[in-house]
Length: 204
Image 1 (tube, rainbow, N blue to C red):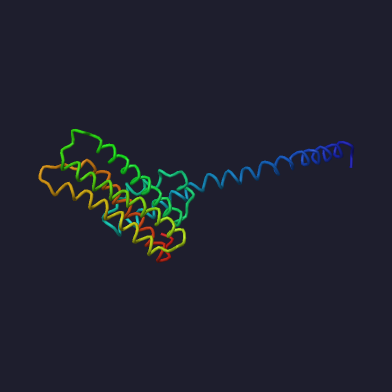
Image 2: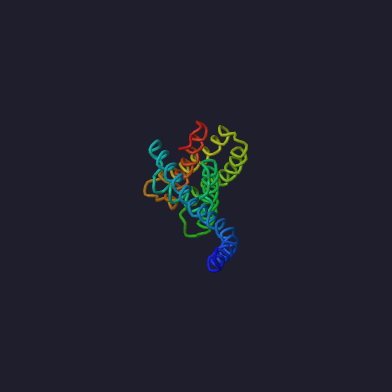
């Protein structure tokens, strides 16, 4: 072997030694980046499939409303079906808590007619009970007592319906809570449907 070939071999060995630390550092980062980039895709796919399934089964659930609502939670992109169920319960809790506060604000308006004030008072009490119901539902859900959680969420759904129906009892009276009650009803339906899918062992 001539001196030139020996020099080339020595250079190759040097380059290989230099590259090994680079690959040992770079490849794990590349793999981690791949996992991070693909995880949201899987999460989004589960949201889409879940919403498609439950919207097809329950006419009270709109597909777009379902996907938009679940996507609002940052953790939904890496959630399992069980996780999406908890996210939907938390969204419902936020919704009724916000509505409860909104009703309290409306009741402070001194220009309200007596009937509107009366029905708002009913709604305020209904949503007070609904907040407690959702808190119990969270405990039951975490314990996988889905039938008990179902009863609590069904009560929330009834509260929204009862609140809205109250305003229709008097001719000419317009409910200021129609959209909020509709959202509460639909979020409740999403929770119930996801629990149904979990109960039957579905992966959606």
